[in-house]
Each structure stands twice: as structure tokens, then as C-alpha cells.
Amino acid sequence: MNREQQDQFDGGRRLPLVEDFYTIQGEGFHTGKAAYFIRLGGCDVGCRWCDAKFTWNPRIYPPRSVDEIVERACGYKAQAIVVTGGEPLLYPLDYLTGRLHERGLEIFLETSGSHPFSGTFDWVCLSPKRRQPPLEEAFGRAHELKVIVESEADFEWAERNAACTRSGCLLYLQPEWSVYERVTPAIVEYVKEHPQWNISVQTHKFMHIP
Ligand code: SF4
Image 1 (cartoon, rainbow, N blue to C red):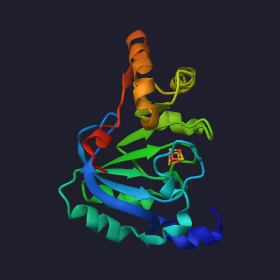
Image 2: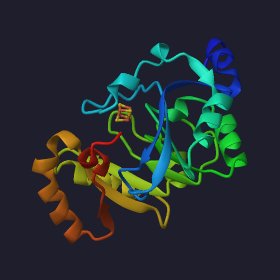
Image 3: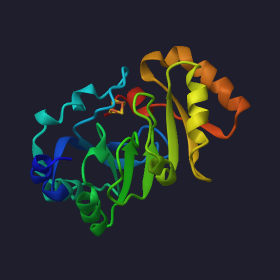
């Protein structure tokens, strides 16, 4: 991050917020839990099938006060916060996670792991992307590896990433939403043959919630 950007984000006291909302975590290990989502703008990975392309350009999301974001989150009954994007690790996250922890909230991170870590998290969901693979440190931090499967060719990519995770990291295969019908049967068979993997589906899309 250059000097101008550092000034803009004031050491993480301001962040480019896309949206924040209280909903149910729809995918991965914490599926079904009520959680307050803080979605930050900006991502330089560029996945073709990304369902959050509206987040990519951070310039259209002016930096917003983290104190105000935290106050708003505390106005809900949420016990857990999901920090997502975009790619949240583009920004210094220590201030955000410090303020949220002071309020007794659990913090879950959703990341591609393609940028250096900042912040302190209770749960890290690492979702590796071929276009910009995770940095080595991301594997050491992940509690959960969630690989998006677009075709059967992705199983080998999933195994390559799983081999880098630490012991105890949970492994998930998640069908890419636009090919859900086509790819899910292959994922089911793969997991039956390789039971160290679990299946994650985007249940929020079935429930028509954000
Ligand atoms: S890393 Fe995530 S936010 Fe970024 S392009 Fe890929 S799916 Fe979209």
C-alpha cells in the first residue's frame, strides 16, 4: 500500500465499505449461524465466475469510519462478524478486529489469502484462487480450506492446496453456483471416495438471503 493509500485508510481506522448487514452465514463451517457481514471493496484476483464483481473497484467505495461500522454491528444481536469482500486483506485490519473483539464479538475472515495477513481472527476461511494463489502464511492461518469447484479439473487443484494446510484444517469443496447442477454429482462422488473432504453449498442462495 502506498503513502496516499495509507493516509486514506488512516492505519485501518477507515475502510472502503461496500455494505454491512445482518444475515445467516450460508456456506462453509459456520453455515446456519447468524452473523453480521462487513464487506470491503477491492479485489485484484479477478475470478471469472466471481459473484461479487461489484466489489472489485475500491474507488467507488470511499473509506468509512470503522468506529461507525462497529457501532452499527453492535446494534444487532449478532455474536459473530464475517469480514469479507472483495479481498479484505488488501487493508490493515488490526484496528477493525481490535474494536470488534473489545465488544466481545467473534470474527470470521473470508479470504483468498493472496495478500499478507493483518488483524486477529477467531476463524479463517481460506478460499484459494488459481489466478492468484495464496501466500504461504495463509495456509498456516486457515481453519477451513474452501475450494470452489467449477469442473472436475479442480479436484487436483483442491488437493494441491490441501497438502499445504496445517493439521486439523477442515477441507471443503463448494460447487461454483452457476454450474451447481452440473458439477455437484461429481463432487458428491469425489467426497465419497475422499472422505477427508466435506461439501459446502451456498445455502443462502437457496434461502434467497444475502
Ligand atoms: S477472490 Fe473472491 S472477490 Fe476476488 S474475484 Fe475471486 S471470488 Fe471475487
